[in-house]
Length: 254
Image (cartoon, rainbow, N blue to C red; front, side):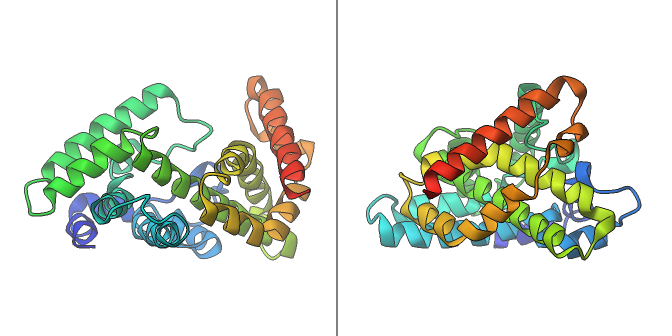
């Protein structure tokens, strides 16, 4: 956490703390403070980092239990460091939704993250930061990168579930359209990869089983009208992805 605190107290850290994630789905009249209150600390750009660190710690602990020998102690530290630094670049490029992010966006984000990591790599924790950036964040298909990407995807799903619960409870009607869009976007993009990985990581399978009722309800609140939020040229593809995810979910749960 020394890594996080050293970044958080800088001007960059303060700026990141004033930004929110999932802004694309937020009504203009809804303040950032209320958005965070509704969807949790994970939608504050700065607080997202220690929250992801917490998720990573839990996942690593469960992997240690369910898959002994998969990770050594140093790899566990590198993964947890990645959680704390992976979105530093968003202070410069902003938060771009998963479904909107292009290869060009990814390249810019990587370049800025590399530059920021270089600033903080001079201290005693610098080697961990360098490894986290190069071997995890920049290498999503590596062993550590794949594990961390799975944690990130699980984080998206957690927010989607929370948004769906607001829709079901009908407590925040001014945000309902945005919440439904979050749910549709998250389930359409994340559910199939998570289901595929559930056979690799037992802790993920356990989490999905525990959340089965909530995930099923989230799928059920989405109608075709939600996809009108996307640009016209994307709507059919987004709807098809969602339907494929729903089919995959029904098959998995049965």
